[in-house]
Image (cartoon, rainbow, N blue to C red; front, side):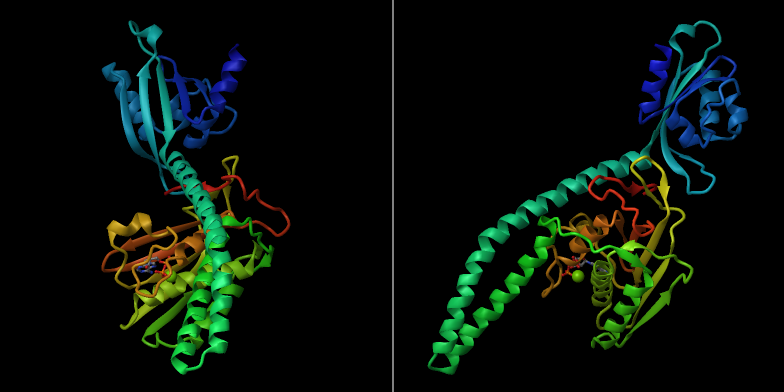
Length: 374
Ligand code: ADP
Ligand code: MG
């Protein structure tokens, strides 16, 4: 039974530590070792203050409970990490029931808020993406087919038109039908299991192609484009055409946000140390970050939640598909797209991608990645 219990506690998503009355670790499960960065072979027999440090928040709270004899709960205590930013952890310390009379042992429960938060978001996000897929498939069927008929009829009218006005009207119909058709095609990316053409890619290839493209576009002469590229980034497994599509959408948004005035768009690349993607089995993955930073007007707080919903746009001629499609392709690569914005100061969009060497495929259809730290 004891080893069963160990297995069960190790499978828990919460960390559990059991201390005896002298503060010596009697038991520690896997999640607690991970959160407190203690070695895997549980240091039972060691004092918690020796394994960590007397100033460690968990030790301080445990000591307080031991002194006062009262259980306590603390939300989102920042737990220091050696190589990453601190992690918000809910800590509950209670007194072991059987020893309430004498000197008490303690049970400490730890819950990693960053992981559970992003897991919840991840599930929510997946459900949303799936529902876009259903809607897209429905629209494709109900809209795309009649559009073909309308287009054909309009072309016929255009050919047979006797006067210029009628021909122009018919051509207008054809043009607008093509526009709607294009939108439906774009929306279809959510519906189809459209695959990635994975290759070994240096992330700077699609970025350089993007910069060439932007240089040829007119209308943003007042905007300076800065690049902070880390030339040491290794090649990784990705679809360069899809990456370019993501990057183009994000760069266009930044340029459009700064339209009409001077502005700076900063493109940067590098390894992400603080915010890393996590594999299905909880290991941090090496993560490449590509950032698009502008000093435009920023995004009003009220619309943050709707940004990546297909067709949400604040622009007169916007399609509202740029962010949602970019997020879709980022996720198909096993990555994550994050938007940060301060009204009046600017916006930064980070595309985090797992640095997987070419050929070793990540399982893209499971929620294999989540952000280590939100
Ligand atoms: P579209 O560009 O066609 O409007 P997107 O999905 O690309 O669609 O963007 C949705 C909305 O998000 C935009 O209409 C805009 O309000 C907001 N947005 C996106 N990027 C930025 C940015 N860099 N600065 C300010 N607002 C932005
Ligand atoms: Mg856009």
